[in-house]
Image (cartoon, rainbow, N blue to C red; front, side, top):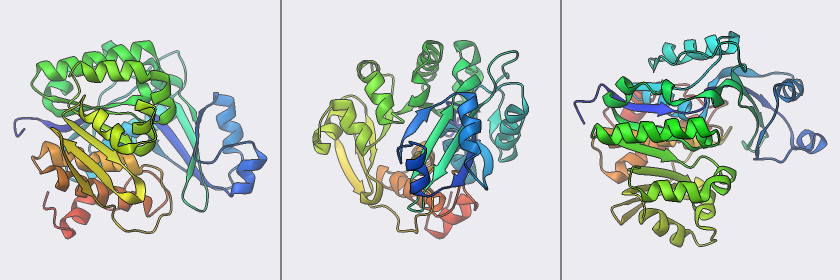
Length: 332
């Protein structure tokens, strides 16, 4: 795909993250379920933020983190996501452009504020997310920049944005445009609750043949087929999509390409914060795929990117992943 101007275009929720450490007793005291993601109001975001004595603030969102990883690996990345014309929206756009990501989406005026998420990280690295979706849910077909889709080797769609009907139509328009341009559309299932809400719609969409690559973690894959048998879930996804990537935490990842499976181990690292692990894995895998790497090497590159991001606080790389990958034998 050397004729592409961008390796990866990400489309997803543009969310400004607020991350802080907290102990499990505090989670219990406030009635929060460790490891969960719940949707909250803008006022609840402020209330949860007030639980933290220290926090870092950085642009986030699943697909946004993925393309940030692509850019750090030396890839050419673009992003479509809706922010508001406010302080967080300005900061989000600045953060994305600062790391080399093409970001053109027109901000929302006179509407909901920019989305934000307070991510509480317990000592074991698990994250509990409290997310106000705000302006991010106002993405429409009009926001799909066809020039970006036509110029991207892979358009990566974030399943979290499948809830609003207008955003769902925007996704379909982007996938159709990518297919018509001879490009690849990829989808991440994002979350087990997301799968449970949209199982039939996801499966019908995958069955139409518009998605070339699907990402799921083990729980999401099981939820898609309402089974406890991961082998059956992997085979079920592989029957629908040419390339299936199922991440399994410390067990590594399974990649199935046209029915042929390969298992790749996880990279060994100290776990500090699991936020962004799947997002960065997707970034490494997608860049490898866009550059013509073998499936196992794509997964290895994804595992390297994920290992870096979970070794520190926050969902964005703290080193230049291109150099990090080069030391591991990936001259990008």
